[in-house]
Length: 257
Picture 1 (tube, rainbow, N blue to C red):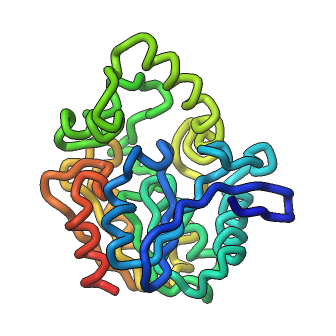
Picture 2 (cartoon, rainbow, N blue to C red):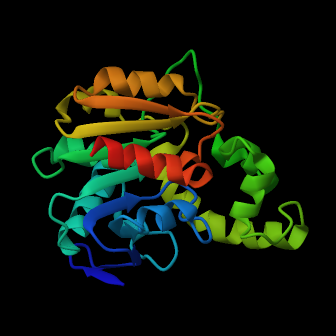
């Protein structure tokens, strides 16, 4: 647990591995049970993965009102952890936050990896409204292999259509989506498109070719907007590209940085 002074906040941080510092920012669903991406990253890096207020044991979501508050919060967490120019990796909502961090504090973030980030909106390619979805609909939205995704989301047990599982999920999810909604609802656009030009970090953008939640065309839009960037599309992977293909994502990060 990490304590921040302004505003007074306690933040849960998952840490694992040895080596170069890597800061990981999760998506709207938080960390998956036994998250395979964090496990893969920890084989090569010293991973610090804070949970945003509203997730896990992290507190202080009422003090974060908008995108700027969340971005500064993430920078405060990075500073409190004493991470000096880490590789910053963000998935989906976490990628949106990571991109904002790199745009605002571009002298502090030199290496950036965005995994299917949210934050842009293309009228011709609308993004699915995750706030309107029930648990049993999520595997097909997040994964190319929905059955394997279901096992990852439930840690190999539980029926996502079961009424008891649904009750527990909705109680836990209310707090998480209350926080995520500040950034993603009704659409995941808080003006990031107008700030991407400020990113000077060497940037790796990774997308699953079969992403049905945020279509891969958004990867091309990010690539066009961020000057020092490379786009890698991974076959047979959906939106949760890191959890579905952790070895491929790890290799892409190692090869680029």
